[in-house]
Image: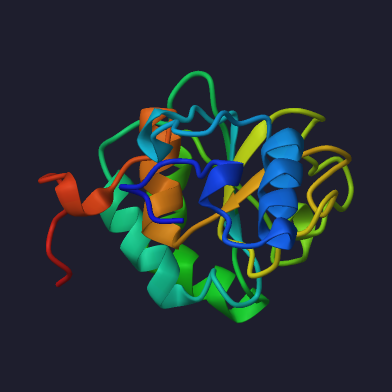
Length: 175
């Protein structure tokens, strides 16, 4: 669904199969039909995965968060997409921007993308994630994962809920 949209209702389905799928999704994700996406609070942000933590992704997210702080109710992780990307991001000062904002800066690896090590979302909690896959339990048993772009995840970390970055005037142009 779109960031400026609302959580669908089973009645929005055009077939019995679609209606059942929406009902199951609502139950698993702990959402109510009609809730605006921008009203949904999060507890975790995962900016990482091999396909959504490229140097260009990290630059874009860092450009948004520079000088800002992660919301006190959010745990935010950055896991660069490769060792090369991590090294380049550190050389460019991006790691410092993330750390100063309150993100945990990690080594390249799978991490929260597939719930490895202690990098899991606790049951019932929400994560704005840049992972490229989402299925039940991927980031932890009964974790509630919402996939989005790196800049959207970075903005959610700062605000503590989903936001539409297109509406924010605080995004500097890339240099």
